[in-house]
Length: 250
Image 1 (tube, one colour):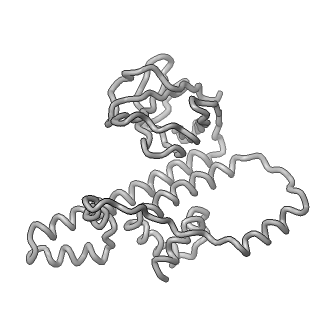
Image 2 (spheres, rainbow, N blue to C red):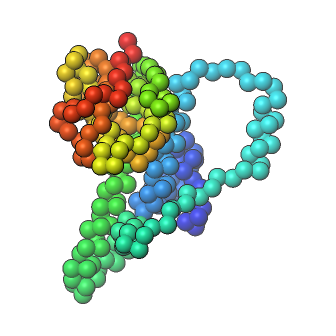
Image 3 (tube, rainbow, N blue to C red):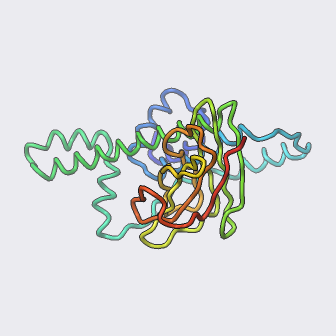
């Protein structure tokens, strides 16, 4: 199986539709492919979220239309944007495969600090991939929980936010679409509203308008959540007025 083939398996992986052999190969691929890691996270969250939707009976012609269209459309491989020259070394380090990682270790005594640096960068990439997959599984567990409850609201600038809370998981997920990017040097920070007292629940990705975020920490009886604009890296307490406040579904 080629790398190009692996790029097309994000959807099947998210739906647990791969064979054991294909799944193992794709998991190895995720360790070296950031676009596929991100796409898999998004597709897994979406698939789990769709499981909560109400079912309706489709019109009779829809089946034939879908079958016709899937014969003419194929999944595109994710495309990585061109990087400035100064970023190419970092990008290469993130893309090192397990085979290259082993080679770096074997060459460490001959290449000294350079090989050690490459090994550390490769280890970082593998750890990031592991964390991404764990995060995807946790988001999916909340969205697919039998007791998952949702509440949606219109946010600023036409954005739409949905919070999903599972009492059995004691966790919450915030799904947002169309969120404006924060000002330069700033980040959106999520907060649990503990009946008037704000508790940090992590940071959103400032470079993405659509994302699903697992709120950091247990819900622990919180009444809702808020979003503020904070300096890069976040704050220990809100330093600005909330751009959004949402109460958790009862």
